[in-house]
Image (cartoon, rainbow, N blue to C red):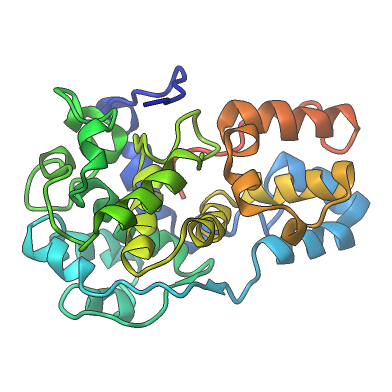
Length: 311
């Protein structure tokens, strides 16, 4: 299996579980909106120079009303609850001090849902934590060859960081639960998309689900494939999800395409956006961030760290 590894490819639980789960869960809507409040070096720099241009780019990438995909949870979450992968009580406890869970999340613990999923600033943090265990636990043939499948299976941020199931750590559930009914053709669709999709926190594909975002997107791909979506549709879904989970990185990417290639966000193929060239950490730095610095479109003092594993 052709997997790109980086210095952060094998994230151990002790070093990363806090960022992967606690910060991600507690980040809430405010975490997803940090780009909009211009609290990053990139956006603060651009604000006074091309605010109207940036505003349009940001709305293209991340519309405030969100984006609805033609994929629903079905009974996947209730299956995870029945298998012990999700403990509703522990899940709810995470959100007690922040006003509790929205009703649509609580209903997923006990009822199947045919409502199409909407990714937005409000829903993205919840969806991350619902899809994360789906990616970890769903049993597939291709996960037999996953880089996680071995003696250290519980020591990644994705597996060790999942602590709100009945078992102490999510590694105990890796590739063990029939949360979705995937045939071999649907598995092939999910695997193809996962192997060609990256995230700007590391150099690993979604197939190498070593953090919560990787697991969540794999779970979303599996969910979509199980409902008959084709690989090109998965790429469209993946671009939407990654954009809301890594808002700063993808707004900057759209800014790069507009200013240095004269392409609008909708004019760039989703598979191109999600590939290692632009969406891996090293690819994003080399092919998005540094060219913008060289062109004088972002401050050279900015660190170039596109995102972390927390929403």
